[in-house]
Length: 147
Image 1: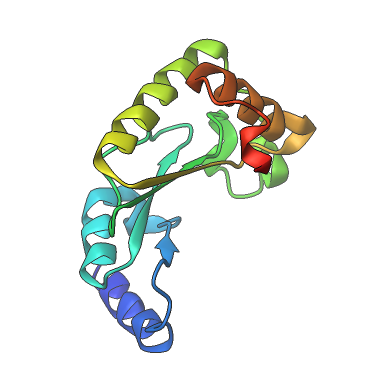
Image 2: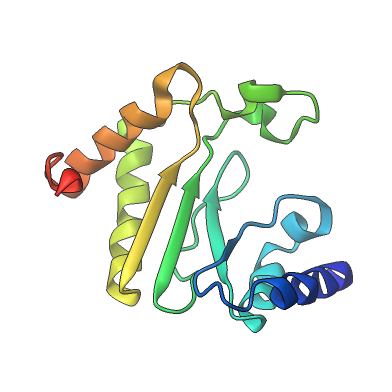
């Protein structure tokens, strides 16, 4: 995590005009110590990304600057395998899983002014399918997103 502090310092030096930079720890000690990494990200006034994958679930309290950024990678067990390629993202969330995640989204919306939700479980069209299912669960009109 010590390296992360130096890394965030270098990012802050070149991105001082970016108001809403979101950072997702993805490797080594940063993933193992995700909450500590999130605090370092906040220290530099960036937005920590809350993730859902095989071993982690969304932390609805994570965010900064009245923004929460939620990223759903899928819960495929191969997510952390080095050579898994796109297969690590090949996962379709079940209705039950989406309902659980929708509760985290609703809690996030109560704490933050804006909540962004991105599905990154893209192989076989999983992301758009799950995205549309989530809109239905949240009671958001599918047409509203185009207005």
